[in-house]
Length: 239
Image (cartoon, rainbow, N blue to C red; front, side, top):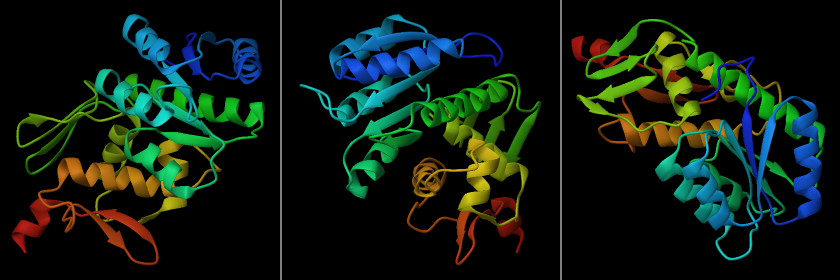
């Protein structure tokens, strides 16, 4: 993964050569190294063979669709994924987020806005891996090692994407504090823009990984009319 300030390697997966070329040129001018794949099979092969820091993934690909590519990528890497989609249906965006994408951009899009989002994700990932903190956060059987970038619950290691880890660490660092989705976008994603459904889906994924019963969460609770709050289990157990 990237240490911020070093050249990043970005894989652009799009069968439209014009879009891939435009995105690639913007990234290269910003100092990033770019790899390009026109189909899912090539993307998966590159993701297995190459060191990557981020993937820009088109949803509409020939053969293996972008959602399936995203699903398979998540079995081999936790690098951030930004989807590109021409589909208007919210269900497609939500599905992509649920299977592991970090964000999405609708087509047509501004290459400059995409670059800003890419750099925000890379900056945040780089900060996390530099230690975005030092030490260990604990809540009963939930342990988050900031330096090692590792989380465990009940002694079992959790498979978290970079953004899931950042969100969990942030909430653990601010127990019993309610945050709106827009606040979490700013604090965790480092974005002043974006669809707050991204936060909703990431919270849902985290609950499935750290809660005993994701349908009745005890740790990451919904604060109606506000957003979300982390309630330490150790406090609940004392009451």
